[in-house]
Image 1 (cartoon, helix red, strand yellow):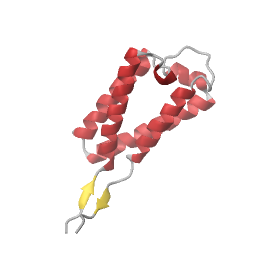
Image 2 (cartoon, helix red, strand yellow):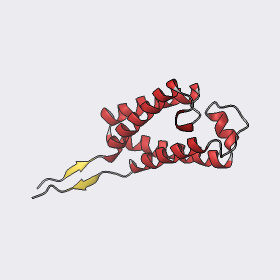
Image 3 (cartoon, helix red, strand yellow):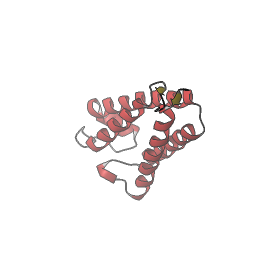
Image 4 (cartoon, rainbow, N blue to C red):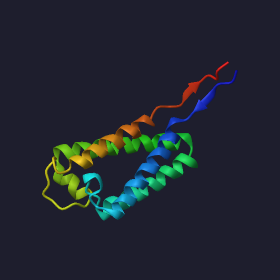
Length: 133
């Protein structure tokens, strides 16, 4: 029997595209959605990320989607580290007024951890699935 290939990176890009689109729309409605600091810059970045992720998820190559997941995961690891170790730098990056503490950025940090984990789920190559007999 033939082995069907399932591409995880493209699926994760579709999921991330939807999640980032929700975050972007929420940022337009409320800058404090789920306690996060959704500034205009933050919202624009979410819209751009959603567009790229959705394009790669639906029309991109599996390798391009995987690469996007690797880069996205690395960016989110950096954001999490900044959020805990240098919160004022992160606040500056997302366009939030400083000074802030890591505690004040905790909702952002938690969302960044979740998004980073999801990105890294898309970094594995394809998984082989044998059809049931």
